[in-house]
Length: 410
Image (cartoon, rainbow, N blue to C red):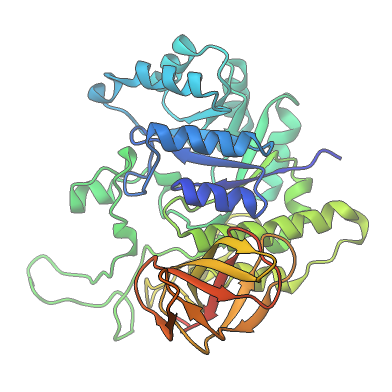
């Protein structure tokens, strides 16, 4: 049985390394231009080269996003950029616009092309059209059910790869084709600068009664009428595999390293368990519990079974559920002394009980018994962002092991 690919977001170099270390088969990332996440850290050329080298040395793939809807000015330096990507030996370019497609075909004719979800492919004829024009993979629109995906798989050539989103934020519009941000904030969502007005709080105002804000529904806290729940399909691995897709995509290039590592590991373990024995596969609730420890909104299955109705939205808040704090990441470890070099990510205090999450295997819990700063001095608290802390570990750990602490529910 050919295994599906687990594809993870990489908003910067650290997130790329986290994704691959915690079990991703491939990552997708953007350069400083042409991608739809202008607010992400993104990659300069040097970081991109280092990330590609890191991934390829471990047998993993790297896909580059060029999925903006470009205006004339965006085309000026695009040829040089594609040449640079070709020289870096990226594994594929993700695009949505025929103009960008023509540039890639002209400059790098052998480059693998993936068609972005921005192209809104919802039927098998569209997929077949792009296959006939040399596209290797289509990222299917989120607005498809498992049954629709199966039909697409059955009616397109076997060589066409299909990718689907399985986890992360949902857009209120067809796969990002939205003008709200342009209209309300002057920021073009189709060129990477979305202000996410779909997550804002709204009231109704009648034209001749300015200043009278009427709630759209009966709740004193207001309304978030466009605010979708987050997609989560980790409980449906058999249905996903049986739909015939090639790659399972996790959304979140703007999410934290903690999010990337936690969610990737949960899906990796679920997929591994399925492939070990598909006939006897049983979902383990611990995988969902683990995925939920990363910051998220309430979960939905999106369009996978039926079209979403009222329950697919969150009307009372736009806040995330945050049950855990990311407090540190292991940058080095000495097996003889069992001392870890930890980079602080949130305030740590002597006596804190932390969960130690390694790339493989179950996490373990330990109490912070001692900490030293970069000067070797004993400290009781690590308050400064990204300060170096030395601490003993109860069990052996490896680089990029995560320390998390149970925190508030939101």
